[in-house]
Length: 272
Ligand SMILES: NC(=O)c1ccc[n+]([C@@H]2O[C@H](COP(=O)([O-])OP(=O)(O)OC[C@H]3O[C@@H](n4cnc5c(N)ncnc54)[C@H](OP(=O)(O)O)[C@@H]3O)[C@@H](O)[C@H]2O)c1
Image (tube, rainbow, N blue to C red; front, side, top):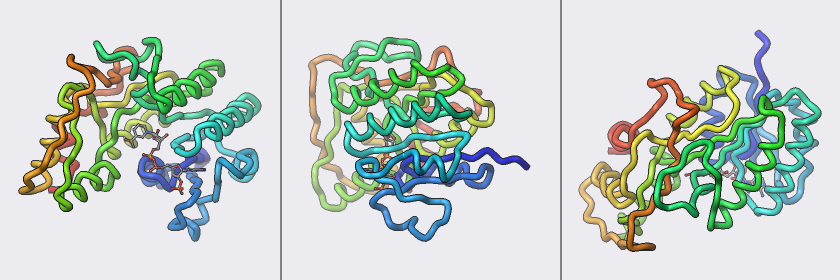
């Protein structure tokens, strides 16, 4: 069988590694790691530091059909690396799936945002994502997919680990009572990406839960599910009114079996 070659940039990270695990049995899958040495002995992994290494060398070695970008790191180095990715895409029969964020809309607060809404961000992180998205918009459409993702939870997620540690240390947990969000988890996110790859889907996708919840309520439910804790909550009010940080699908919806509601994330996917 002629398996597609997939290269995951940031495959040693939380999201990138979940993607690697989902795809590696079905595709010829490669990944990059930077400081994490766990993967040093895995032949499918290549060392890549975006502040030092030439990404073209990685591309020459792997010759990917699909690149998935799930990186963190220095912002200007990320921009430069993505400029190089664009150059490669133009010249090769390769497609890019970019893990973006709901933060591309963090300057809007009165409503949730949909795929074709104009992006606007007040944060450096959101602006970085917008900059990379805008580079991608200049590519032929069949070469790219932008995946806007809200906070990702899951059994091994840094967010859940941090909550657990904070609870065990009896320290306060920050919650945002008037922040209304959608959420996702690693399992569903990676299944959705797998589907998009199988179907050769391109464009902009909002990959969060279909429904919304207040940040404080979600975190409280998560903690309830974790055990008999008596959390100290530090309620942070950033504005007087409700504020939305949610990217919902309207135009590019996924099949019903691949959608998720926040309650499922709490019920099925968190440690009990
Ligand atoms: N987690 C979420 O809730 C969430 C939500 C929305 C969007 N996202 C996006 O998803 C992507 C991955 O996030 P994550 O939570 O999985 O982050 P993460 O666990 O910190 O993983 C980041 C990845 O980037 C690599 N990396 C860091 N610095 C690097 C450098 N200088 N050169 C090359 N690679 C470097 C890391 O490699 P080493 O570990 O080997 O150093 C790791 O593989 C990010 O683009 C993030 O914006 C995440």
